[in-house]
Length: 178
Image 1 (tube, rainbow, N blue to C red):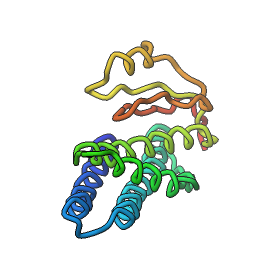
Image 2: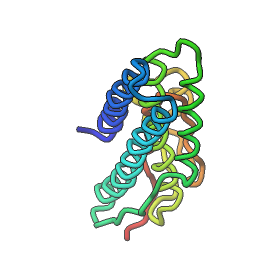
Image 3: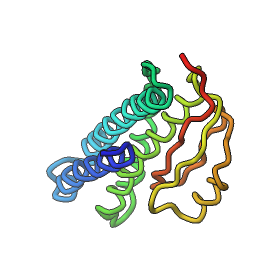
């Protein structure tokens, strides 16, 4: 399973988990505060796994390119992630007639965004990377294709632009041997 497939699978797992929480909340088996806590916790867990996977994927990519062992960087989710997810869960549940699809969209998008941000941070922090090119996912949109700009090499410290649901990834370039 590729890195992209694994990140998508994390999003799908999170969507399944929040479906059960949403159903319990809709049936009034749990109150809104409990639903908010559970939604935020499950999505934060998916984000943590996505960040760890991004860290590992970057190290594996560099090892493959360089032919020498490369350690992970120990990337962790943003410290404000839990508070942000609580606010997002509370906001979405406050929407009159909120749908399961909307809650699941949040659960799917979050790990994608967390992984992309972590991978970008790893590219920036790695001593083995001086640049990157955008690898457009098979279902890449016009915007992603434009951002790829025929293989343009971006500086390592330039964050990769993304949009909700984007599964494009960075490919490190011009690294030095460890």
